[in-house]
Length: 180
Image 1 (cartoon, rainbow, N blue to C red):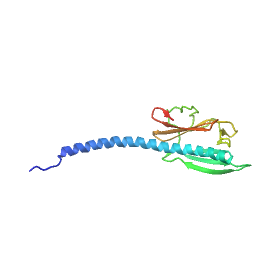
Image 2 (image 1 turned 45 degrees about the vertical axis):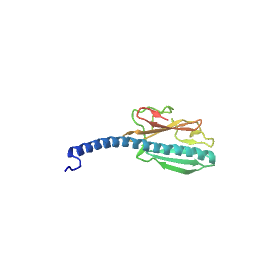
Image 3 (image 1 turned 135 degrees about the vertical axis):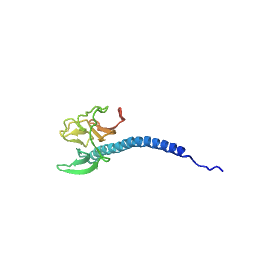
Image 4 (image 1 turned 45 degrees about the horizontal axis):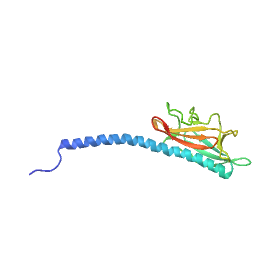
């Protein structure tokens, strides 16, 4: 009478193959998590900028966008004749901060990557009632915001703002280039 079943060497081979497949999967999963989390945090920056522009246009008031290290964004409406009102706040999640990764180039928009939050010499940036993006003196200003999670270059993201049209673009670092 023959008994069915598996021999010990067969079981060990199957377990070894499963371990290899799981090891590969875990490495890929980690990279995918960095990508998904980077996208989620990029969207926080993007939607805060969009919200600031919409409030500025709809309420006919300038809305300042304030970036506070390491990961905080606030929108402040400038009231007439004076005063301010905090209209929105957001915090980047997943241990993401405003940061530059060493060796990564500027975005294709080339608005600068000297610092993680780069609006040239501007001390303040805001959307006007006309929908323009300007500095504290009312001068149009282009800029870039770079974010990421330390030691995870695939989480690198950038959001750029073009002054004249207040166009907002998002970029994802693919490991070799910025993609829109």
